[in-house]
Length: 384
Image (cartoon, rainbow, N blue to C red; front, side, top):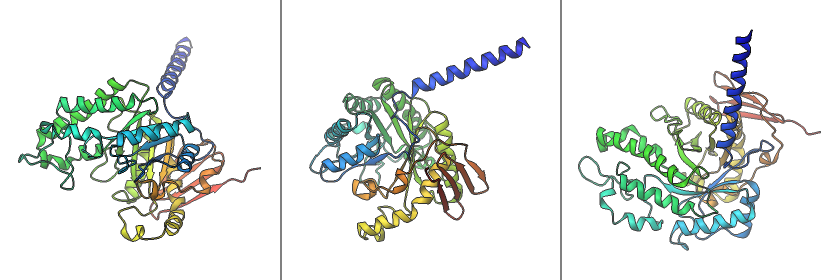
């Protein structure tokens, strides 16, 4: 009897310590609520900074925003300057807003001031086994992450920008491009392994410089048959993006189920999860992009239920949805849907999986998803 009581006491103590540790680890996260659908923003605005009305819209509809590369370009030559300027605007409007600085972990974009320095460091340019530059699309240089000085430079750029009181985190992009096993053919196995270790080191080295109070967000998860990376970088990171639910190479029922389960798993581990889903179209679809703004909005409205229900099926505390057709402000980022304003409430149970059918209940909504046929319903309960 005493032994049983001792075990129970130890369990309660362990549970308390676990809850306390999580509470401490997420205190720098955006404030989270189940009251309504949790929505995040991730965009760059082409041409100029945000207008007053655009900034007010974003600040009043979310408290978690990533500002992309080329924000403000070409009026603002350098992304660092434009992101800094609009970070202040958003924070002034919403002090609870967490603004994240986009800084690609693998690709050298010329709209950053940092690019000018990188151009002088030829030893840091990634090359193939034949000695040729490994260029994306024949033009973008890639970072050789196995090089310690390159990582020191990269993490210092992150630190410099995060020293800004209005910037709360850094977005590591293109990690899936780094980890793609197909790169072994280009770099050789030894170099490939060194770059994988270099990427892990880059995350740890950046964390050591920026401290525990800033967010590290990384992209991400690809639940495809050949590239299901999952939550491969749990140490020293706070947030993970699932970038292509239901589109591009993540259209199969198997991939979609894995995406939702990966969101659930990462969320339960304490991670922020950004669930990027698409209205069956994207900026690469020329036919869709040729349509009027009104037509694109109507098409997106038609496909919302499946995307939203899929997100809600696996969402955990600190999970956010992004639903639009690209990474520019004018690609649906400022569209808003009535469902986003409906009372949601806390989840009453976990996701139930029966073959390809998913179900789940919230205080004010019941979710049903058919992944095989890409159908879904959300039963919003009437408010008294």
